Length: 513
Image (tube, rainbow, N blue to C red; front, side):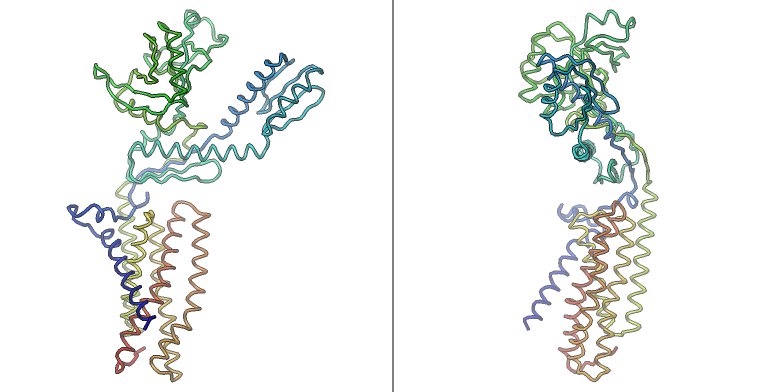
C-alpha cells in the first residue's frame, strides 16, 4: 500500500506539472490571463523562428601583440629609471630584442626576472624576451571569455529576443539572434572595439598638418566630425576604463548627446586635465578616431561630461551602449553570416509538428492493435510522457531547434520500446502459468534491467553530445536526454500504477495481451 501511495502521488505530481507548463506553451492562451501563464512559452531556435546568425573571429594574436608592446614600454621605463640606455631595443615577431653593454647585463636580468610570465634567452648581452607558452594560453582564454561577456552586454542592451551567444572552438564566438531579420545594427555594434580615451590636441603641430607625416609624441587621427584630421598627443589624459556610466540624451537645442560619468580615479584625472588646459581643445578618441574635439571652457570637477558631435539619435544611443558594455580586449571580425526568414522558420515548425504527429499517431494505433486494452494505458502514458518533456523544456528555458523536434520524435519510439518490453515480459509470465498479479509484477521487475540498460546508454550518448557539441546538436541532446529520463519515470511509475489499478483491483478482469 505504501508503494501504491507513492506511485499515486508521483503520478498526480507529474500530470499536474506537465499540464501546468506544457499546455500554455503548446496552445495560444488568452493574453488577458496572468503574466505567469503567458511566460510559459517555448523558446524557439533560429531555425524555427527565423533571424540572423553571426560567427565572430576574436583576433587574439593582435591582443598578444599589444601585450608585448606594453611589456616593451614597461621594460624601457624600468631601464630609464636606473639610468640604463640600451644599444638597441626593438620588437621582432612578438619577441623583444634588447642589447646592453656588459656592465648593465646584471641589472637588465634583474628587471626581466621580476616578471615570471616572461621567457628570456640571452647571448653575449643580447636578450630575447617573450611570454611563456602557459601565459599565452591563459591570456588567450581570458580574452575569449571577456569578449563573450562584452558581446553579450552589447547584444542585450539592444533588446534582441532571447539571443544565443556561446564560444565555438578556440577563437570564435557564435551569436544567434532569433527574430532579427536585419543584423546591420548588431554588426556595427559588434565590429567596434570601443576603446575610448581623452587626449589633448597638439595645437603647435596642427599648423604643420599636411606638411609632415610624423610628429614626436603625437599622431595624426581621422576625425569623424566634418572629415577633419587632428594631431593628437599620444599621452592619454583619461582612459575609457574609468567610465562607469554612459547614456544618450538631448541638449537644450534638442541635439543628441552622450552623457558620461567617471569613477573616482577618472574624476580626479578629468578634473586635473580640464583645470590645466582651460581654453585648449581635448580630443575624445574612440577606436583611433576623433569623434569630438571640444574646447575646455572651465575646469570640470564633477566627473561628469557630455559628448556632442555629428550624432543621430540611434548613433548616440549605440555609442552609449558601447561605452557601458566596455571595450573589447581584442578586435573581432565577422567570418560567417547567415539569415533565416520567418517564413522558412514557420515551414520548419510545420514540418516538425507534422512529423511528431505522424509518429505519435502511428505508435498509438500500433499499440492498440497489438496489445488491445492494455495498449490504451500505454498510449495515455505516452501522451503524459510527451507533455512532461515539453514542460521541462519550458521550465529550463531550453531552446527548441529542429533537431530538438527530431529528438522528441525519437523519444516517442523509445517510450513505446519500454512499454513493449514490459508487455512482452507479462505475456511470457502469463504463458508460464503465473497468476495475474504475479505476471504483472514479475513482468515489470524483469523488464526494468533491460529498460535501464537501453536508456542509460542513450543518456550517456546524450550527455556526450551536450558537453562536446554546440548549437543544434545540443538542442537534440537536450530533448533526447529529457526523453530518456521521462520514459523511465513514466513507464515504471505511471504505467505500473495504472495497470495495477486496472487489473489487480478488478479481479474478474483478465489480461488480454
